[in-house]
Image 1 (cartoon, protein in one colour):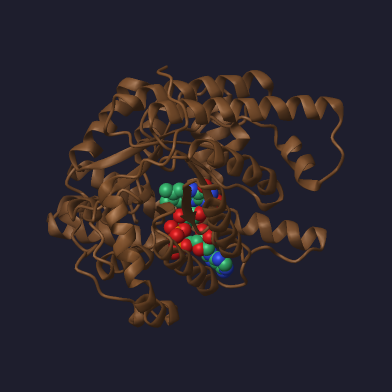
Image 2 (cartoon, rainbow, N blue to C red; image 1 turned 90 degrees about the horizontal axis):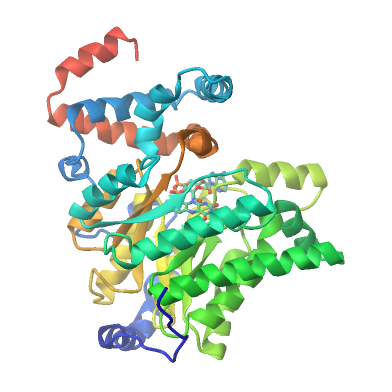
Amino acid sequence: MAERKPEAAMVSESTLKQGRSLSRNRSDMGKGISEQRFTDKSSFPKTDVSFEDTAIAFKNKSDTELFLSYLIFKLTKNPFLVKVLSKAAKITLALGLPVKPIIKATVFRQFCGGEKKEEYEKVISELGRASIGTILDYSVEGSEDETGFENTMKQLLHLIEQSKSDPNIPCTCMKMTAIAPVELLETVSSGKNLSEKDRREWKEVEDRLDLICSASFAADKPIYIDAEESWIQDPIDDLIEAMMAKYNTGRAIVFTTLQLYRWDRNDYFKRLIETARAKGFKLGIKIVRGAYLEKERDRAKRMGYPSPIYASKSETDEAYNRAVQIFVEHIEVVEICVGTHNEESCQLMVSYMNENDLPRNHPHIFFSQLYGMSDTISFNLSSAGYNVSKYLPFGPVESTLPYLTRRAEENTAIAGQMSKELEIIEKERRRRKLYIAGVLQSSLCL
Ligand SMILES: Cc1cc2nc3c(=O)[nH]c(=O)nc-3n(C[C@H](O)[C@H](O)[C@H](O)COP(=O)(O)OP(=O)(O)OC[C@H]3O[C@@H](n4cnc5c(N)ncnc54)[C@H](O)[C@@H]3O)c2cc1C
């Protein structure tokens, strides 16, 4: 791997220009958008980007693929069915029954890139033709031992190496729990004294992360590090902050993730901005709403501490939009990935960009969605010239089962999102006049 040392800031000319022009506008923003609250849909700014064009969104999908997507989203709307099918898939795979081809041809195909490189490379090229970058997500979960962690690290280093020569892979991503034991993260988070063994293991975790970040730095490809449950997040935050200070000297290479359903995250965001300014590094931030809502609330209730999560969806939405605004106000020091399937949040980012005359492909701004979801957002944004990427999980079908189950379960929990996915697929089917599929659908009583 080519050696590249962290060096002094090397922000591109155009970025600097944008940063300066934004600073000039900041006082106007203070009087305008800063004071607005976007809880009411009608108060959302209108932009020239529309997410309604289903022909653009599904241009890569054949009629059969479209029908398959429809069936999958229709089925995952039913929580009971999702529970039964997830359990059945796990048991039948464990028993060695021949269900793998069925899973692979259906739900795996919808949400994952493939098992092998030859398979997911096709998806990368397909997305690349629509100017959408791929963030390969090595989705093997559950290997909770040293060998498993080392293997995951090697796999990640391999992906970073691969990304170097592939312009369709703008960055990579990882979860800390893929290279660190959850119990150790819990212990460090709790502030308890570490045993000698814990200390040794913790050093190994630090070394693994450093190796991954240094490889990303050498490859000049950012790495997005996922946010996880709040009770293990503090040490993850500390580790990432140290990596950002070390490797984000020129541009943001290491990205942390903020879950805006947590009511403490925008304050943390502001503290990070101050630290980045004081220490002279760039802040890499992926903003998401958060994936562990029920788990967080259940644990807080069970253990008798205040829930770290906002009490309502609208408060989470407001916090998300506020994070977008904080970013724009500090764009010269922050690079962002807007990770969401929420149209309003994307429109808000677009409207801020318009207001501040930022180019659509501004190097500090990426939009990102999960593969198999919200294609209307991804494809329409990229077609309009914005930077867009998709998280693409890959790996053996058996190993991606926890991811697929979570996807299905999340989808049943997010009724609004599911209806939206179905709505857009139905719209495209109507546009293509797919009557035969319609007959088949009604004969299957769907
Ligand atoms: C590219 C990408 C990367 C991601 N990375 C991560 C990650 O690192 N860590 C992580 O945790 N998640 C991650 N996610 C998942 C993300 O956190 C959300 O679960 C998912 O994207 C749904 O939120 P949304 O903004 O897309 O859409 P929406 O449908 O607008 O929002 C749904 C979300 O709102 C929040 N919410 C719903 N109901 C309530 C309520 N009653 N009270 C408070 N909040 C509520 C929840 O967070 C829920 O997931 C990622 C998603 C994407 C697209």
